[in-house]
Image (cartoon, rainbow, N blue to C red; front, side, top):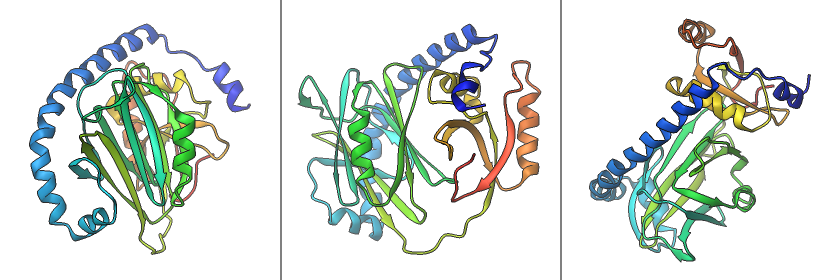
Length: 282
């Protein structure tokens, strides 16, 4: 059965209405939490600047990039920004640097919208999520991302919240990254560097869904398994799967699946699988 056929025959959970209601409530809660992020970012700015100048590798990397605006923080994972709505996203690529720009009503914003960036292995990937964004030219972003020689692939994730966007940047092996947040004007800068060292592949165990096309069915799985830190991976056949974990042993994966399957809401829609860290699942 093809991915499209599996998608068309996927059994929608009986608790779908409850799931969507819960998703809306969670989206509202996430937006409220952005208010706290706004104030914490101001405090973090001073700490971030001290952090940058005391790490030679980061300071050296930044010194080679022409800087426009005021740096707020440098991170490899985490979040920042301020609560916004109706922001348009644009990109600009140059060598191993990608600038993600934001504007509203044709003008550059002073601060970036609230965002998070997460780093995961197997495969090596970055997950960017932006809130308060309604105009997103994904095809241009994908083209600019793929112009970077250290990027392997880029793909979008569907989110039930229509004021949020998420995309995944799959990196080549042995690639490191820094994410810099700027204000006045507000933009995000992703810088990639290669370690130049070989990476030894390892077997990784996941709890996964069946493969299906990108769409709302995957977004519903995110709401159902949000507490389990679910993410999404592109398969070798260009479908997508929801995954939980990234365990070193099958026993660890089985233990986690046992916890999930004991819930009354579990729909028997997950299984354990493994693949090499430098490969995509089937």
